[in-house]
Structure formats: structure tokens, C-alpha cells
Amino acid sequence: MRRLTKKKALTLVKELDAFPKVPESYVEATASGGTVSLIAFTLMAVLAFLEFFVYTNTWMKYEYEVDKDYSSKLRINVDITVAMRCQYIGADVLDLAENMVASDGLKYEPAHFELPPEQRLWHMTLLHIQERLRVEHALQDVLFKGALRGAPPAVPRSEDSPSSFTACRIHGHLYVNKVAGNFHVTVGKSIPHPRGHAHLAALVSHDSYNFSHRIDHLSFGEVIPGIISPLDGTEKISPESNHMFQYFLTIVPTKLNTYKISADTHQYSVTERERVINHAAGSHGVSGIFMKYDISSLMVKVTEQHMPLWQFLVRLCGIVGGIFSTTGMLHGVIGFLVDVVCCRLQMGIYRNLKEAPLDEQPNGETLIPTENGVQSEETL
Image 1 (cartoon, one colour):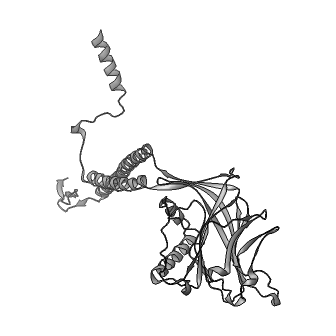
Image 2: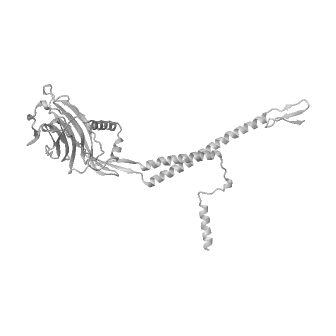
Image 3: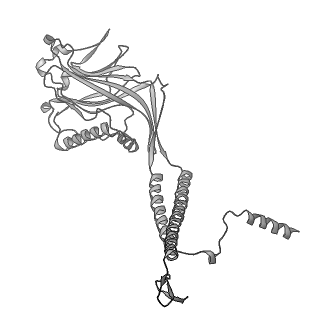
């Protein structure tokens, strides 16, 4: 009974076979079939190789949500060189609530405004990268993938005597409230004031005014080496002593999660404006560099993603099966068309033979045309 049950089960399984085997005696190999198979295998190999590169690659996914973190502090990272001596200028932040932020985290370092050849070459390269980033926005994804955690490389200090320096490098960081504010560099050191703050500009001669500047780095949030901010590498030359440079920034909180780092940083967009201060011509204001920033209420989450293994296998099976089925159908259609054309040619030959007239000879014999062109004689 058990053997009979097993035989019935095997018979049932065989009847459910969706891949019946054709005996080899019924299979005929042709040159056209071999050619199509060779083309199909080549396409499979090429597409599978390209699909493997897609599998090993990653892409950045962008998500947007409301920024609910309103109590934390915002870090401002600054590295700017101004073409004035350090004792003549001061930098600080005044937020929307008229609160002056202490600038203890900023360092004033005497420097040369002109860059040496090696740093000038890097500066020109940075400007070229900035130009490409404005055109090719997808390059930002490459920068996100290449971001690393750690301190940025230090700028080498000059060995010249302090008296030969004519510029001032202001670098460091500040922590401010997450509200709109104004970071500025202007004449004179800042002092507290009941209505905000003031700068001791009266102690500085107008002849020493020169707000030509170079922004080596300006970012918000955690410093991430490899990320290039929009103002990095910006250099402005002031043609007049009384000159105002204004930068209007919109800061967007950003959470960056890649396979290398996970950090909370900020992106920003910027528009700029500059003008000469001339009270006689109606152009009023204060000479200096002003960066007015505002913080967006939306937060961007940037996540690096990778194709899962199961999806790669499914796509690979789709490539193999699709090419195999498509080439099989094309081979069948082409073979059918060839057979139709050949059959019509054969039918045309037989039709010409049937409609050809019979040639009669004087002796009563009739010549009948044949397929190979040879005439046979028949006696009437």
C-alpha cells in the first residue's frame, strides 16, 4: 500500500511538471539558433556586469520634516581674513532679540592678505569647484559621501615678524541662539551697550579702512571636513575705503547619515550685495562685512542608501529571463518570416511551371517543360 501511495504521489508530481523534457532525438541544432544564443549570452553577461556596478553604488535620499529642536545652540564656524590690522577691527554677533553674543571663541591672528603660490593654487581650485557646484547640483551628493569626521587641516602659520603683517585672520567658532542674527566685522572693538552694543570706531582713522576680505570657511553646525559651503573661497576686493559688504543667508538644519559619519550640520543659501558708503550721495550705512542669517523651520535628512541583496538578485533574474525569452521570440518570428518568404518563392516556381505553354513538334510530339529546365518528349 505504501509503494502504491508513493507511485501515485510521484505520478501526480510528474503531471504537475511545468518544465517537460524534450528527448534529444527531437531537438535539432541550427546555426541560426547558435548565433542567437551567443548574442543572448553576451547581452546577459554585459547587463549583469553593469547591474553589479549599480548594486555596489550608493545614492542619497532626501527627506523633509519640521525642525522641532528650538532650544539647542547654533554653532558658527568662521575663518575670514580682512585686509586690516587686528587692532582696528572687531567681530561679534547680534541676534534678533538684540542680545550680543560673546566672541570669546574667535581668535585674531596677524597674517598676510596675499596668499603664497601653493595656497593660491588651492584657492583657485576651490573657486572652480564652487562654480561647478552651482551648475551641477548632483556633485553635492559626492561631497556628502566623501565627508569625514575629524578636525579640518590647520593653516600653516607664517614665520614673518608681526610688524610686517597688514591683515588679520579671524577664525574660531561661536555658539548662538537658534534665531535670526547678524554676524559682522567692522571698525573698532565692540563694547556692551544697554541697547545692544557699540564699536569704538572713532579711534580708527578713515585712511586705514580696507574691508577687502577672503572667506576661507564659513559653516554652521558641526565641522565636517570634505563639505564645501557656498561662501568658502569667496574673495572681495574693496575699491574704496568706506565699503559695505552684505551677505544674506538662509540656514537649513541638516541631519547627515552616511556609511562613514552621522552628524548634525547645516546647509545654507546666500545672496550678496555690496555698495560704497557715501553720505553726501545718500548712501548711508557703516563700513564693514555683515552676514545676516535666518534659520529655516524645515529640516533636511540626508541618508545614504544601498540596494539590498534580494533586489539585486531579482533584477539579475529579470535580466536573464527577459533576454532569454525575448531572443527566443525574436528567433521564432524571424524563422517564421523566412519560412513564409521561402514558401512563396517555391509556390511562384510551381505556378510558372503550371502556366507554361506546351510546345508541339511537327512529328506529333509534345515537349513538356520540367522543373530543372529539361524537356521530355511524349508522342501523341
